[in-house]
Length: 322
Image 1 (cartoon, rainbow, N blue to C red):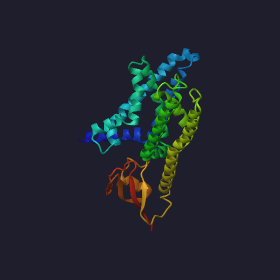
Image 2: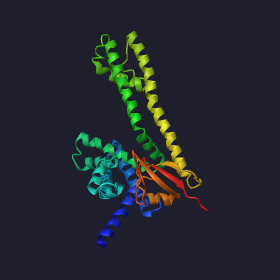
Image 3: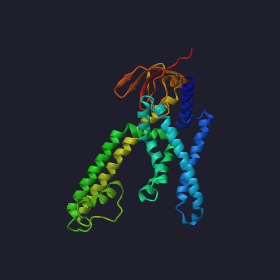
Image 4: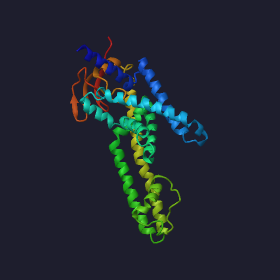
């Protein structure tokens, strides 16, 4: 029984080192620095291998690449092993599957596969680009990146709706331009989908000039479509900008909890900084009392071991010092 407890303690320590990134823990901090150097070194070698002038160093580059990939493999296996701490509400098997299909899990897998399996095929060589996404893991430790990802997740429905509007405008403008320009430019606008490239470059940019209307009616339509493109791009931009303002206000309220004497009940949005922490940890660190957790359509009475999730809303009151 004692060996089981010690095994769990070791597993939890490894999880805290590789997943949490606790700056107060020297080992965790050292691991963060080590994995950062490994990621940057791997990406640097990937770029340097494309220079013909450095072909005499290809052997050295290959050694560095394989060593860094082996480090990624070890980290990948440890993340799978400790996934039940990352998703404590799930069973071990479900937690590991959840990690495998997560962004980090997919990036880790796509980073490893091209080196050990069929690396000679073009499609697997292209998958080496996936290792660049490891840079997101470095940036994810900073609050600024957490704000961006939280806003995108929170406003996902509005963003998807705006993208859907852009797609509809793109298809409609492509079909209209085909109807007007097909007779004048049969080789350019061969069918309704031939104008997709033109409509995309017109709606989202100022056009590339490789495909353009030559008829008077087509040019008038192009002017109208270009104006519609300005509005189409402004919709998601406004949604994301408003989300940034809301998120920074929430983070400002949370960061000022220690300096503010909260006499009334307040609602605080849970971001990645406090997600996966227990109620007890947050209460001790921020000197506050959590009365209620709002999660989706549920209202949860908090216990000391209740784990907060991303996008939860906690109802709190600051502790009064007498």
